[in-house]
Image (cartoon, rainbow, N blue to C red; front, side, top):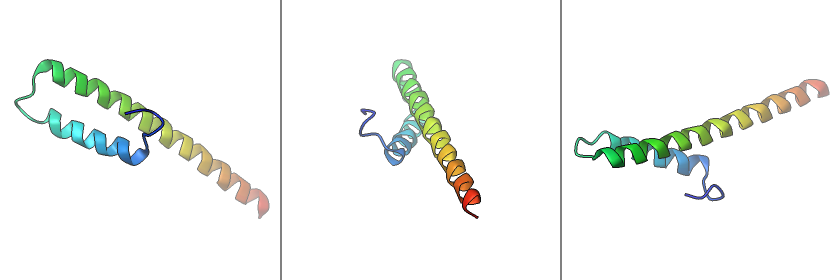
Length: 68
């Protein structure tokens, strides 16, 4: 998944799919490691997006306080 086309929704959907796959008992070790690594990368991207959104919300809240 390229970074340009990845959205919050597509990342979360992919994370859910990865979790489902990791919960299967018949998955081999190499696939498990690959999925785990991909999941960590997606988690980091989601966390960064959340922090950016939180910062933007704080900015907007601060702007509203200055207007009032």
